[in-house]
Length: 341
Image (cartoon, rainbow, N blue to C red; front, side):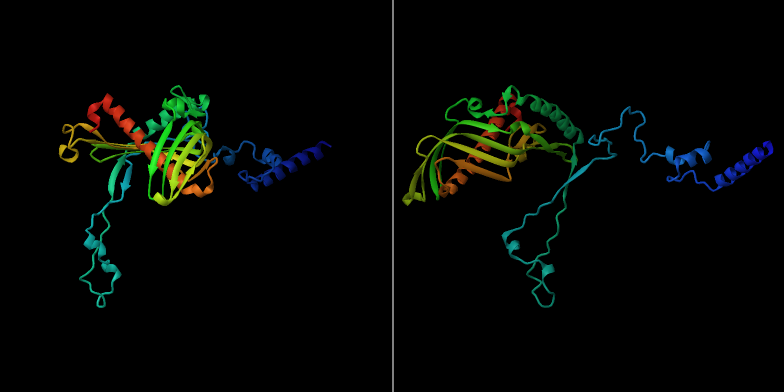
């Protein structure tokens, strides 16, 4: 019995040793039992290999999928502005020489236009990231409290902010119509959903100017309130229309953007005509409001007056943009007079 047992152990050991030579311990499909029997003490390369290199071994927790990994560039990040050329009205009338057939067309009466060199500017990445970082803190407060600077945003009570009644009192005349419109009790909904969708700050390569653009986006905005409208449609010989007293209105705006843009330059008296040479000057302020779609409903005013409604809406937005720019310029000039011409 002892002899049989010893023989069995020796044979089993020989079989195990022979099988072990043909076992690939790096095979992913190898069963756990075979791995225990034949791969004990061997290095399991698959188990020790990571699917991706570790970026920072000092980090206690891996970055979330939305976390940005910041890497400083070695040189400046450029931004190209297409170059422009100024052609005379006579040159505009001439065809391109490349469009003519030599020997058949008159090659003397044509022009060879060249693509102007683009203007290369440098992006100010520190300023861009500062704006993003500051806005993130501000946006968190807006989402938590639906207000900014003590002003409730949802809904925004425009009458209280404007401090007058009616809030809007507008008269407009055109070849198509003339209208007198009053609006009040205006509430705007959706402002607390604001988010920053784009930041671009560029500098000239000599770093003596700055062009900053920020795009704030709203997926949907709505407004409602009261209005009173009287006017005529079709000029002097047209028909009159009226809202028949105070009525309700509502407006829905889809994919709206507010895009403040400020340009600063170093003063050159021969160029700007004001300021001291070398001073910083705000040369341009813009705050355009754009949208993909707008729906306006004035109660008790039929669809036949759509031209009036559309014209008034564009006029209101344009005048409010201009009023806001004027207010900002006046406020800046009052605080720092030398920044505004």
